[in-house]
Length: 297
Image (cartoon, rainbow, N blue to C red; front, side):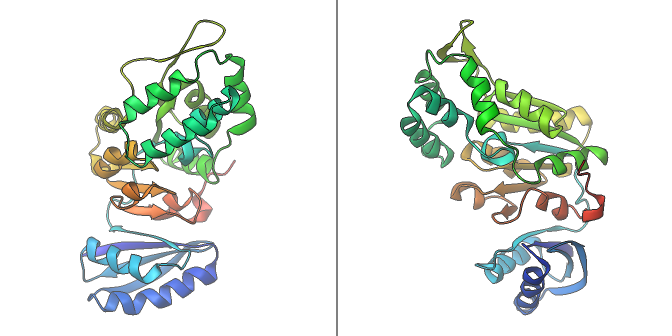
């Protein structure tokens, strides 16, 4: 079987050292490295023969532990995906928007604790969202724009990821358990074709402390992945999903390539690949894109 093993590190030296470590480790599981090629600064693509993907992935993760290099093992064929479905908070952007709103409302500590537990899969997402939104009752609507302007930033590589896939015939959709106020703005900033999220109810001047029903959570994210793929007439094998929290897990498991980005343990353990060190352009390298193909303007 031909397997693509992609390494993405902070620089070419780290990737080269990783390759030197990997080669004997893979030989130990009867896998042979052929035709290493450079994709970009710190990014190497390896053609591996002689084992299945799970065996190569396990061997690579063990060999690279502590190296600061991210790796992705997958079938060589069909790597370039037609559909990207991405989580927003702490994945495409740098913050959890509900926590930042809670800061303006003076309840950040309480809300952040619930957010963390929900992301780890310790709480029911829908119930946790209702509880947190309830604490925002009376927050002036102007604070939503302040939170966006002052706190929200695209994570490194996000715009390049979306624009490069779009320029190559792909479709990128932002699907969040957060709120449409933010997804609409983030989608525009990064170049997503569409966005789905929850709606914060308001009375014209302030938040009412309730959220629109039904709540977009774990199963709705999975449904969005399937609906978007069906709308394009493609198989799930041609999709890529990325996220960091427990409510992303179903879509990550269902996608052709499911990636955990700076993720909670429950997600990282089930994803096809993890990005713990590199920026979001790693998802392009994983698909075999070269740095000179990136759309960065």
